[in-house]
Amino acid sequence: MKQIKIIIERSKNAYSAYAENVDGVAGMGDTVDEAKKGALEAIEIQKELGNLKAGNYEIVYKFDMQSMLNHYKKIFSLAALERITGIDQKYLQHYSSGLKKPRPERLKRIEKSLHNLGAELMALEL
Image (tube, rainbow, N blue to C red):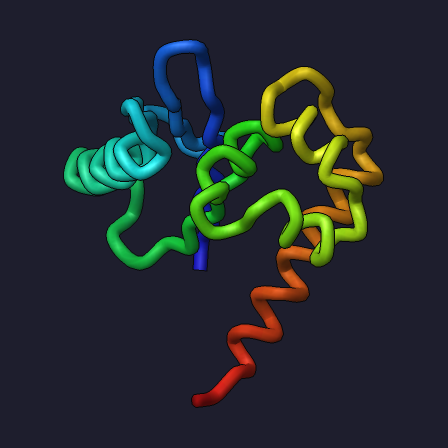
């Protein structure tokens, strides 16, 4: 299955979503969800135009840290993220506000911690 990597970024006024590896795929909106929706619609248009082969694609969303933290703040408090990642809330707040950017090693640590949580949740049965 082909992978389409969609980059999610925040500007001062909106969110943008664009494919890193497919031309003509982009979306914008006031929220991450609106930007994602625009990018997914653009994928369908590219299929209709024949620029993308018909079929299923794995969509991978790549966030900048500030956008990710702000988008998921309804789900993850800074205290919860500190417990999951082991990174102090003070630093997470700096990343969320855009005051500081995490070093690459710290980005990987946050990503790995969230993936581990996701894997644990996927294995859960109720």
